[in-house]
Image (cartoon, rainbow, N blue to C red):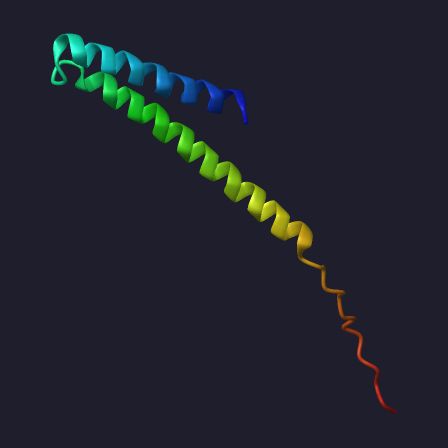
Length: 79
């Protein structure tokens, strides 16, 4: 996991905890924006994770795919 992935996941959990605390103190309507920030961090994390998995899959397919030998294009002429 990359540093930005770890930071976005921690920020998502941290803002969720802050949102829960603020919802209990001020009400959910006043802390709605904190939950949205938490969800945005979670979406960033999931997007980066999916992108990395896709790149790894493409790299594995490229390595596993055997290269076809090139056919020579020279034709023998019959005389």
